Amino acid sequence: MEALVLVPGLLCTEALYAPQIAALADRPIMVADHRRHETMREIAEDILKGAPRRFALAGLSMGGYVALEIMRIAPERVTRLALLDTTARPDTPEQTQNRNKQIELTRNGAFDRVAQALFPMFVHENREDDGALRDIVLGMAKKTGGEAFIRQQHAIMSRDDARPRLSQIQCPTMVIVGDGDRLTPPDRAEELHRAIPGSRLEVVANCGHLSTLERPEAVTSLFMDWLSGAAA
Image (tube, rainbow, N blue to C red; front, side, top):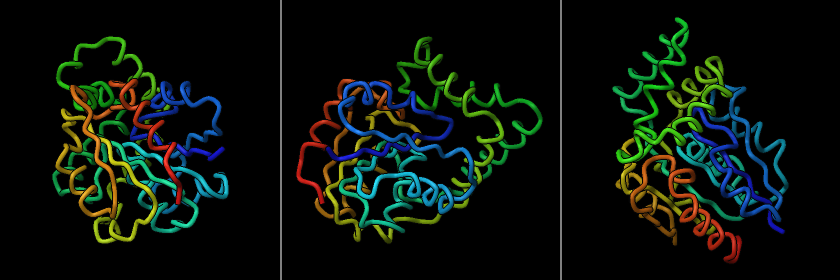
């Protein structure tokens, strides 16, 4: 059976995909560890070293940035692609400024405060008071840790503009976005969809940035459909 490589987002771990991993337990699944390096190239190369020879690839948010880098350096190894709540655009100056502030706070011992402040933007506005979801997200942040968070932010800030390469993606591709995603809103997903030949766009209702956790049944169903189609 086709192997699946899952790449989590910023401050996220395998728990981001827990509902999908449980539903796809009969399939070989690798969850990438993107905490050790501070450039997209290094992260992508490290994942490729441990990945099967050919695999389906899915990435959410920062995981999408990594997935697009994998598509740049080893497209022949990817049988199909899923991009969730992400963008091909590089950081804006304002985003980079905010990341640098978060890095400085983390270096000054305020990592927990940074993680807590990020939570509302990670979820739909109607889920900001969801204690169970908050516990999962903050638990992932704690497991990631401040030092890895800084490395991840450096990788995100230094990533290039992937838009010129989108038209070169030839494998079956699905783009997923929550309709209430405030970090990478639906227009970013639509941009990916328009540029990637033959891609499929799915907008998940009543959902924010962490679609796999916020609307697990809907996203799992989309994953199953995506994985059941013909591969490249």
